[in-house]
Image (tube, rainbow, N blue to C red; front, side):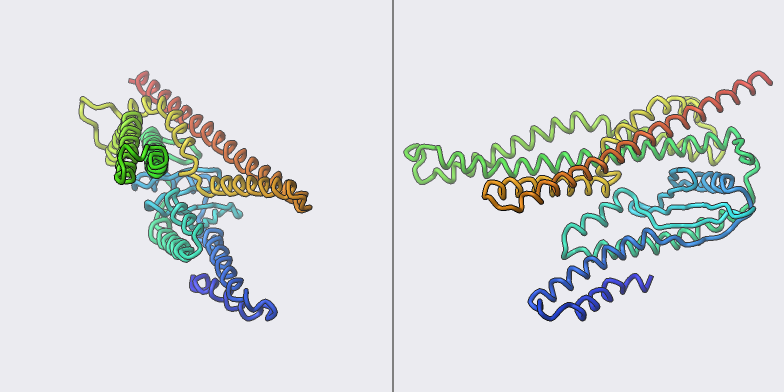
Length: 407
């Protein structure tokens, strides 16, 4: 970690020392951009760096299944993918756990990762050169946090014996209930966070439009209001009217947005709290009060909500996958800029337009490719999660029917 911390400085010094002297006027500027490039490279390394945690006896799928169940019992939000887990450890930090089968042992590796909020905290400073070091500092913190979590939380759980009810992939009823409730809590919480993020984004858009409306109304009224009507007070009247119009617009738009969005946010928060409470009861082997639904009944109701939650998560694509959407945004912006430059050059008779249009086309294709990949991955994720929920529900229903027949 110490080596990563000084890497941007090393790149800066090397770039400054070996910069050609005939461009001395640009030497410091180019070296500074080399420093920024070093920051980006160091940030990438912090998330690509994979360290070996331990090697344990057993099949890799069994090891991953046991670890997932233990983490969920402990209250962590765990997202499963083939051969890996993503464990949310804080509002910005996550840990990616990967396994690899080597002979009769399973080797467990860990990587630093981030939540959607964490990615935003890293990527947004990179857009502004002077605060880019903040992104590097955050990535170093996440790497340290992932290392500490791996050795303090994951390693003790990996050293425990195999869970009997999970051997050979046959999950016990209670274990399946815990996994289902934990997964439901994760999906409802992510949908709640995504909906809330979209609500805040829309508020920001409304405020921006209000700020645009203010000078527009002021200029319009100052230009077209007859001078003989207000005399020297025309500018003051224009400013006052602009403020009134902007405030009315923001107030009305905000109220309409709240009336449409607040019920959904409250519903999602209610689901998150109910599933969290049911999970806590199930892990503690407590029974719910008579007036409340059982864990199985709550899961049955939640199944109908999962497609809705997934749709909400997909709509908040920029919140959940800021890296992909920043690429789409920049590819699109630079494609438009290149096309505009090409039109200007062609109108002026400058030959460079023959390069501008192919560059614009290439950037457009890249934007479409990134968007298509994001959409495909999102659709596959939806199908996988919905399918797993249906299988889990069918298995629980079968177990309950078998238990009733045995009685």
